[in-house]
Figure 1 (cartoon, rainbow, N blue to C red):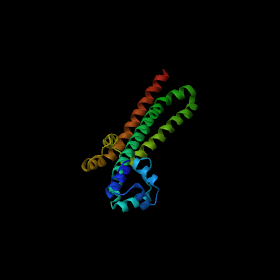
Figure 2: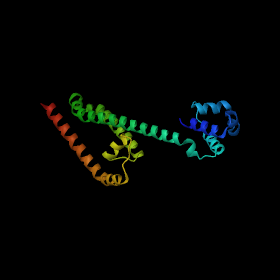
Figure 3: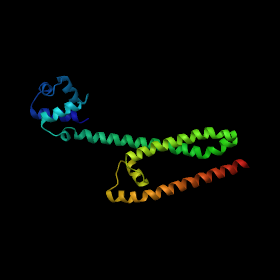
Length: 192
């Protein structure tokens, strides 16, 4: 984290020792040393006192760290979206292609394991949608931009917002048609 370097820089600029700074913010010299070396991060109370002692804004004191934290959060969100989306896709494909085999092999009792697979797909669909909603993304273009760590500009975002209602309807109809065709073909295959 960069705040340690900032503390050291401002302390050096003031010409005070770690011990003198420690007295001003009511901590030990070792605590100041740990902040400066990046071993620890000051709590919010200490950050406010440091800001006052150095006569700088909180932004100036922790700006680099805020940017790093934003980047780490964004990377975490991208990983979550990719993970949940991958699990959803695989479980949805399994749900579509396993319905007929389960019924053929287990009669109507085959609906029980199929329901479990389908429930898993539904759960991860929900998790994927939650990440998308938290990051205000829903169209394909927004998702691609997000996974690349980018954002759409204002005009592109308005254009994508206009497409959302149509995309939802087309997605539902397309998914239903594909599922129907796969199940129909598998039923034909197993009835031979």
